[in-house]
Length: 263
Image 1: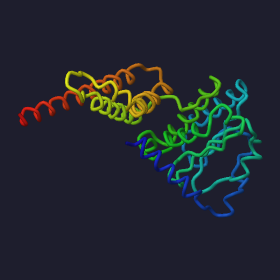
Image 2 (image 1 turned 90 degrees about the vertical axis):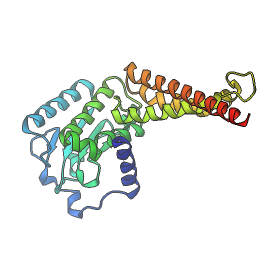
Image 3 (image 1 turned 60 degrees about the horizontal axis):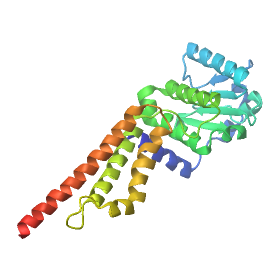
Image 4 (image 1 turned 30 degrees about the horizontal axis):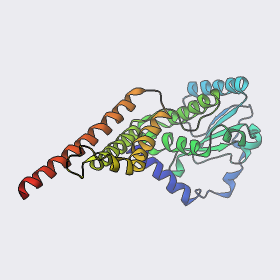
């Protein structure tokens, strides 16, 4: 799944450390425009109307909300550390850097004040969801940057987020698969062990930490924290009940055949 592959790729890049760059690339203030702008598009990711629109949007957002968001796209040339003084970045600032050379397009320099509203896990998810090569390939570098910026703006406007809003199809399919697995656990646990019983409630309760983790925490949790759409919740719940019923009936049928052949 593209979302899962993106997460694994990002973790691998994090463990591998930053990509080494030439020493002179760390501070090239001559690449910065003389006139202040919220967007510096050295890699030509945006069209000119896109750049102007995003620049106006970020300036208006700063004036209304007090948070400074800046965007830098780069490829073979980078102003490096010079952007910190150029934009006067502080604890209320977010610098979004789009650079495809590291494998993941997006990187974030996050001010400390932002961590109080969005934890580090939020920024990791934001990077892996919109900066991975599959999202960029399907939607373009401009859409990756714009979607990430708009996600941050939406979270700041509502006072913060613990997770990135929205449920990608790949992530929903993963939660559905986990819900189905939880249903299998319940179904096989529920088959009666004693003659005359219909459901082995003792075993269902005994294995409840496992199936509640699979269905409730990993199956429904990511949906409930990311979207208000009831459809994926309904689909996962139906899938959970269907696989539980199928597992229960399959075991009953298999046990009945075993008894018949034994008799």
